[in-house]
Amino acid sequence: MGKRKKEKKISAKALRYAKFQKDKPAVVDITMPDLTEEANKQKQLDQDRIDRFLRNNRNPPTKEISERRMRSKR
Image 1 (tube, helix red, strand yellow):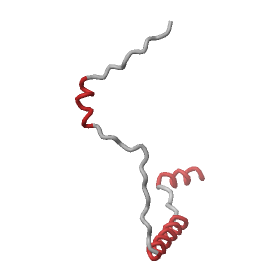
Image 2 (cartoon, one colour):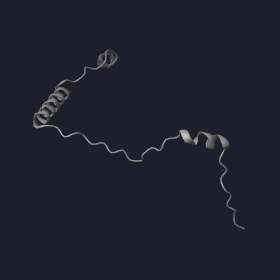
Image 3 (cartoon, one colour):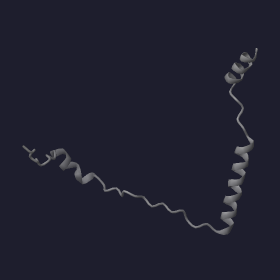
Image 4 (spheres, helix red, strand yellow):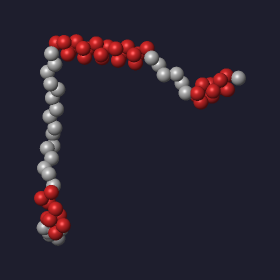
């Protein structure tokens, strides 16, 4: 015996508030604006500075970690 297909009941509350729901697009297309040559050069320079900073500037270990290392060396 197969199952009967019942129609799904929609609550009165859902019907009442359906008008407030907005349709949302499934895919959002985000495109960056075209930059001028000068802006592209500036962007590249900024990126190079950030890369250089991240490569050369290492954060020192926290105080607790350095104390733990000193204790373990004893």
